Length: 296
Image (tube, rainbow, N blue to C red):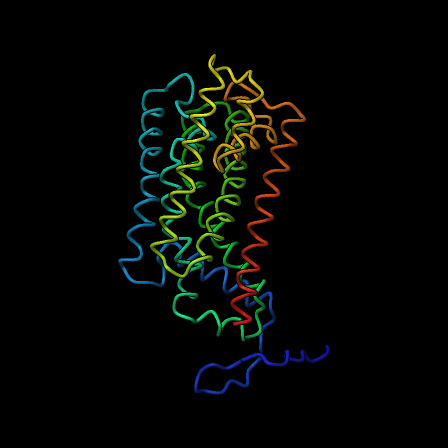
């Protein structure tokens, strides 16, 4: 095996004590950065005050479904009271608050304190750093969304609902959660990285999500007077918010008609294209932001 030649101009030791042991590669470093960032997104390894907000929001997501599961098991209901895919979108404000609180924590702190320059001067490249942080935010959001869905799924099985139907609903809800997590993390990560001021980033993320969702819902209500989503314009109005865009794409990809309507193939492909463009532009913008920081 050939010996790895370090890149010119990088820093391997930033401490006072020299290190002569084996050096791990970019993948191992990115993996460690990813795991550490996910832990930090829930306050692990940080002060007690840092744990309050993420744990509180996780509790807000999980406690209602625990109560719902208790009711459906004890009363032996004929059908599940909550569909997993719908539950995610019932609690959009909670997910938006979590994103606004934790995205700046992952992206703004290193920029604010100037420590990002030390990271980018070491073997990890700026793209590795940006993707590791972005991946950590996606996983953190998926944990927030996935745990209550799993509780709902287990509760439905304990209530002896049909295994196949419940598994399909759980998989559909989780798939929609993955699409939503990637979309929100991309947007939130870019906004948070654009400013090292955490307060500005929090306000900008909340404003972007709430304003876009409110405008989309209002526009859809005006265009869809019969509330059956038969209007093509009303369907395309769902492109205006990350939440409704992800939800409609999930409906199309997983053939989930629980909302009472299904996009046509052409409409679904438009939603897929817009989704990929938005995520791609956000990831590109995030990488360009760190390229600018690396140049100094």
